[in-house]
Image (cartoon, rainbow, N blue to C red):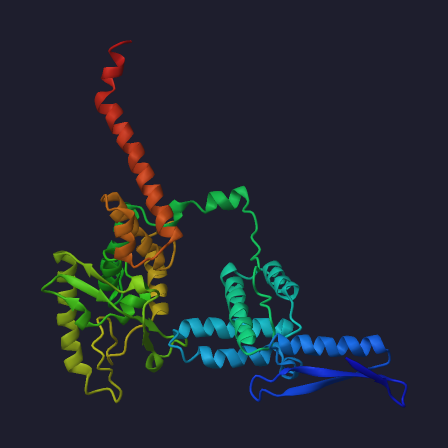
Amino acid sequence: MKCRKLPNNKWECYEEGPRDPVTNKRNAIRKQATKKSSAQLKVQMAIDALESGIDTKKANRVTFEEIAWEWYNVYSVTGIKNSTMRTRVHAIKVLSKYIGETLINRVTHGHLQNILIDLDKRGYSSSLLNGVKVTANFVFKHAIIHRLRKDNPATGLIIPKRRMTVAEIESEEIKEKYFESEDLKKFLKAAIDNGLPNDKEWFYLMAFTGMRVGEVCALKWSDVDFKEKTIRVTKTLDNPNGRMYTYELTPPKTKKSIRIIEVDDDLLDILKSHKSRQLKTRMKFRKQFEKYDEGNFVFARENGFPFYSRLVYTRTIRLCKLAELKKVEGPHIIRHTYITMLAEAGVDLQTIMQRVGHEDSKTTTSIYMHITKAMKKNATDQVHHHFGNLFRMNL
């Protein structure tokens, strides 16, 4: 490395840098400082950065927010579901409030960990924290690929977890996640006696197939095979704005969610009657609406457009209250109840997961273990009841 003192008493040091990967030419690296050692250090740091492949010019002028949106523009055209993209957009906005103006190469692991800790202290959900963590990881992987930094500061981030209190543990009993059989009877009776249009049909469908709300809303008559007695699940309905005309049909939650469900004659009879009534309604109203949806949805408005999940949620709450149930929950409780029905019928866990479209579910497993544990205890009690006299023979 060569150095010289300039007329202004500063030191300038320079040395040939590594070859440019594009031009294959070497460029001299020149740096100035008031001290010779400082100028030498600057030159060496610049050479180290070039040798590592870092684009220092860009890395020293672009912010986290700029790179985050640059990554998102690529990510958004990879076939990701709209609901997932909304999660990523929200996470970018959350991160940008903290480090949006920070240079991409200046963000540290500590910055990101402190963001998660602060969000947790402010009461944000673990799902949001996880979304922030995952999104940050994506953004910094993008930065590494584009030679903006060598490391990923999102690696090894820890999502804060608070130890549950005894009261919280007791209130989170697994039995609170599903209806007992008597409660399900009351709920379905309320759907028959006091239900609004479609209530009986979609709640019976959910209760005896375990389908998700979005899957039910997206169901078309072409998915129902009356001859083979099956229902095909290949899509879910996405309508975040709750606007009738702007829905979108998207792939289900996971690959395992794509499935064919066998159904019994009783449920098929309900669907047949529903289809017959719907055809009469369609003939009556099709010409009355300027916009009529020809999607042939199983659950459709008079203008053919499908219902959205939020409506099913409010209908579920309404029926829980009318049935005077202690558990007033959204439609997920019906799906969980179906899992208990399968477990009580002796269906194994793997088959249950396949039937409800789960790859791996903590809730499904915990419900299954709870039900089968109770069944095993009941079996022990039954044996004792019938054969306990054998123990008393020696007394």
